[in-house]
Image 1 (cartoon, one colour):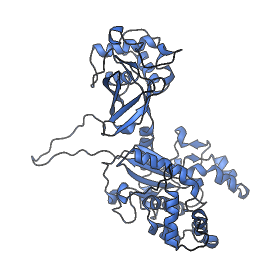
Image 2 (cartoon, rainbow, N blue to C red):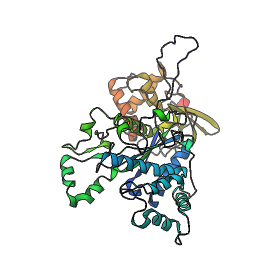
Image 3 (cartoon, rainbow, N blue to C red):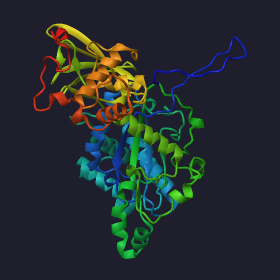
Image 4 (cartoon, rainbow, N blue to C red):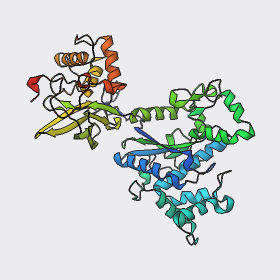
Length: 456
């Protein structure tokens, strides 16, 4: 939870007290594309191993994090059918990550329309025997499933990977996976065709084209939550993976009928257009994407200057530590999942130094937000930045340095033009962070903005 102030009411009884709980706030999202499932099926294909290795790396980089899986289909077909298919796909991935052979046995023995693992002479088994080299068909089905899981669930170095049920948001407390894995049917598409596109795609001869165009909608997403996140499965808003859509509809936007209608214009979620029907899922994804966006900061120092190509130790506000390295311009890229701020420790010429940088930012039109951005961009007011927003001289000096570097009138005040330029420099265009550095290769050495008295 970010640092800040919370308004609470006094209790009426001395023995009672207020409680604050971390909001449901995922910090990362991972996606498995439709191409790694057989069409209209929950059978995972061997092609998914490279993408799964990325998820494994993400999990290992965030030990103790909790996962929740969401399946999605395209906008073709029936809501209820697609709800079960999307849930079966999320179940298949959950089973793979937890090595739950019994769940794959369930999927095998309980077909759902086109999702029939036994179709065409044991389609799933034939695929798995070929992938695992069981050409003699000597392995019993459960053993074959286990071997195929071992083949798929490996990291980039080929090492086997698996998770306990407690690594998921619901911690396996619900026997049917509530809060651990679920399906969203066709309610949250990334793409909504225009009315004209939809009409054209309904022609039988355009079915293959429609399936291809709708492929981005058919996906499985995994959210990662901080390890101290707590949910009660019985209160989790999403219905279980194999339940009907009624529970989903309770969480729809009030204008869901419009969102789910093919309109005159082609719409895409990634362009900020309204395509999701479920407000609960949209909030989770929006937060995860926001937290996944990196923060880039300039690491320089009043004594040491710009630190280019330098290893540093980063300790986040949530206590998570990692070793990172600046690039040739002294820029360090960090994930917001480290918390509201992080302490960056570095040493040069046997002088240990620590600097605080900010990952969760106040608006740039207030002193605290301006100071956070100035510090992240390396404007430290001629000295190591204080850990709290400054008042007076330090902020003024940092603003003057920034204004001088960016061709603004040097006033030392947070005027509207400076606010806009500061926000642009920090959030939009990092190539313009250091105008004084244009035309030279940054190295470890005196910072061009640092007064000479502080440069040695």
